[in-house]
Structure formats: structure tokens, C-alpha cells
Image (tube, rainbow over all chains, first blue to last red; front, side):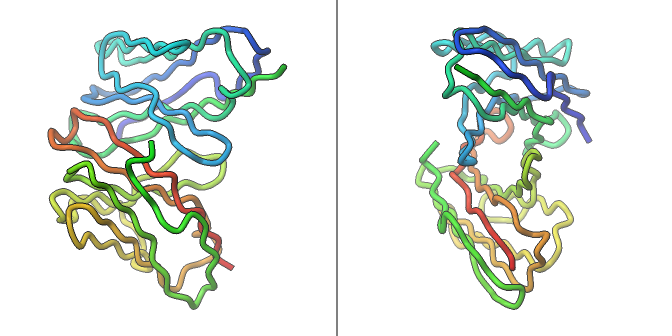
Length: 110
Length: 114
């Protein structure tokens, strides 16, 4: 099956700093989503971005499908950004199955 | 996302108990999913229903039994579970157009098996 690797695995930032999270995938994809899982376990949709660039407030994402990677940018980080960030993909061979990446655990400190 | 509702939020059950997890969505989505998430791990797919028919079973043990009684409801029946089945169980749904639309997740049921 498709492999989805995220980097870095752990990240500690001071409030106000910027960061870039990376998602690499091993095969062609039809669907890519970025999620934020908060400390209570809620999975929050950030972006649906199989290709191109999107922005939502302090967050933006870019997917280069031909090169099999996606980036999530967090600017001016806040303590509420803490949690785990997952990318998840549907590869072209499976149609329905969303496979999650390994995750990046982010801690934003004061 | 709060358009997918899961109940209960927390469940503690013994290894001989029978219980059910419930998931409901009213977005008209025709694909519904169960995922299992252990601590500090990503969610792993268990089952997919498409148009109320089971389309994917990721070799899940038979002590987990899914049911899709209608297009809005998805249940997961639990029987004779083991302590290692303790996890966060997440339900999700997706609209028509299958792979080219996003999944929407519920808030999960945190299950503890004693």
C-alpha cells in the first residue's frame, strides 16, 4: 500500500514563530487532506488539497502531486496550534481508502 | 467538524460485555468509515460502507461487527473485546464523487476495555 511519511516527527516552537511541515507520499494520489488533532482527540479538517495552494488565515498548504509531496505552513504560531498534524491521502488505486501519515507533534510554548 | 455525531463520547466495558458505538450524519453522504486510533499513532482504517454496503474490511477481527442500517447511520457492535482494543474510535463520512471529496470526521468514542 501507499506509504505516507511526515517530517519532522516532533516540533517545539515559541509563540509567534513560523514553521513548515512536510508530507511525502509514495504513489499517485486523488485526494490529500491536512488535519489537526487537538489534545482532546478531535480531528479538525484544515485543507482538502489534492493539488495547488490554499490559504486559510495563518495557515496555508501546497501540494505538488507530480513530485509526491505536500507542505503545511503555520505562521505566527499560537499555543492553540499545539497538537498533532496529519496528512492523509487516497491513492489512485484504492478509490475510497484514506491513509494517514505518521504525523507531526507540535508544541507551541509561551 | 461537528456534522458527524458519535455516541457515546466515552465507554468503559468489560471483556464479556456487548456494547455498540453509534455514528450519525445528515449531510447526505453515501460513504461512511470506521477508524481506530491507538495512543500516539495515526488513525487506521477498519471498515468502509458505500451506499449502505460493506466495501472494505481491513481484516478486522470478528469481535468488531459493523452495521449500516440506513444512509445516515453507522454502528459498530462490540463483543468479547480485549484490553488491547482500548482506543479512540473515529467515524467519518464522505459525499458522492468518492475519492475526490474530503472526509468529515466525528469527535470519536474513547473506549476502555477492562
